[in-house]
Length: 288
Image (cartoon, rainbow, N blue to C red; front, side):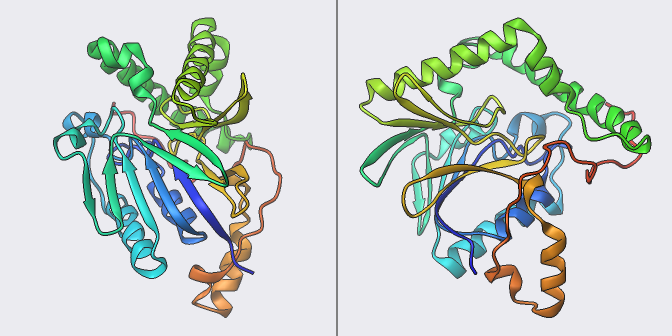
C-alpha cells in the first residue's frame, strides 16, 4: 500500500535555527509521494542566520530531499516567500524546471479555488513595524530555548512533552485575540478574491475549519507542532502530525526491504499530541 497525495503543504520550517526540526521533516517527506509540494514561507530563517543562526548538514538534507522528490516522482514544488525568507524578493518570480519561487499563488482543485500565501502580508506588525516583529522573534526564540530546558527535566521526570510557547499563546488574551483576528482577516481576503478557501502559515497554529463560509487551512510549523496539510485525490484536506506516524513499524520494514523508504505507506493513528519521544531532549546548552 502506498501513501500518495495530490498536494502537501508545509510551512515555517525555519532552517538555520536551533529550533528547526530538520531531521523530522526530512523523515516525514521520505514517507509520502505527492504531485504538488507547496513550501509556504519561512522555510529558511534569514533573520536568524544574520544573527545567531547557523546552517548545518541536516538543513541541506532538506533540500536534497526536495530535489529527490522532483527527480524521482516528478513532484511540482512551489516555494512561497515568507517574512523570515524575504531575501527571496530579490529573485521573485523564478521558475527552474519543476521548481517555482513565488510571492503567493492561487490553487484550483476539484472545482474549488484556494488562495495560498504565507500570511505575513496580512500581519500589520510584520509589514509596517518591522522592528517590533524582530523583537517578537527574539522573544519567541527565547521561549524555545527555555522550552528545551523545561522539557529536558520533564523528560527526566517521566512527564510528557510540554509546549511553553503554545501554553502562553493560549493564556494571553491579546495573543488569542490576535490569532482570531488574523484568521478572520485572511478569510475575508479569500472571499474578496473570489476563492473558496485560504491556505497559510506564519502564526504556527495548525488549523482546518470553516470561517464564514471560507475554508481556512493553516499548515502549522516544524519548530514545535510538526504538522502538514495534505489533499487527497478527491479534494479532501487533512492535517497530518509527525507525532502520529508509527515510525517503529517503518524501521522493521526497512530491515526487510531497503526500498521501503520510497514505497511504503505509514498508517496514521490517533495518539496524544504530547509525546515523550522528543529528539531534542539532550542536556540543554544555557548559552542564548
